[in-house]
Image (spheres, rainbow, N blue to C red):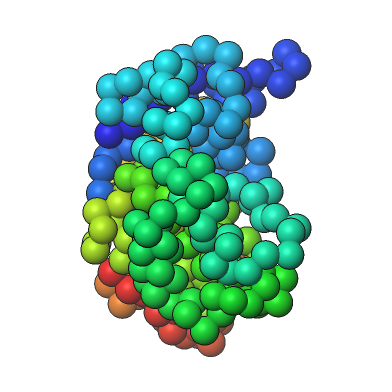
Length: 271
């Protein structure tokens, strides 16, 4: 389990994250949602030690992350930031091999090669393993980057807005992969995500931030409620149950047509 206790971050005199405390359960997907500027990515950066916190602490399995050696921490948590995307001309296999660095230090062993092969198969990238990253589509490229984090073989995987710039089909594919990682490999995944409906359909738990504070933290059924989301996003919302899932309809009533609701029904959800 990861326990975040009262972390705060100031940029200048203004707190962008203000006394945030959350608990992240193992073997679950936890989504962090909220309006722009709510502090979502800043929280993720502090929890993974990419950014120092001005107060509070983060405990991974009861140990403060600030006291853990970098090599040891890299075998416990992995993170894919939006800015992680490299501009190097490397192949999919070479990219995924970077995930083995905490173990190999750049000198791949037979075990490293086995993990890389297994990851390529798991991410269904065999066809592209010798292709250059910049030759791939957005969805294929994102699968390769997530493959890099999987190859790192950590229990906790942090992803910062992995659905950015992906169409609906590729977004669904990515979220299906994340659910498989939890179900088949017992991974714990923490994801910053903008789309409320993907959070609703694929998460176990949701943390909602607003103005740098925790607005609510709980199971998705506790968070995906009309009154809760209207307070967080300051706009009218309705919740429709479609295919057994709670779907947020946040269009103006005059603009929401039967066709739009029908389109929502067609979003494929895999549990």
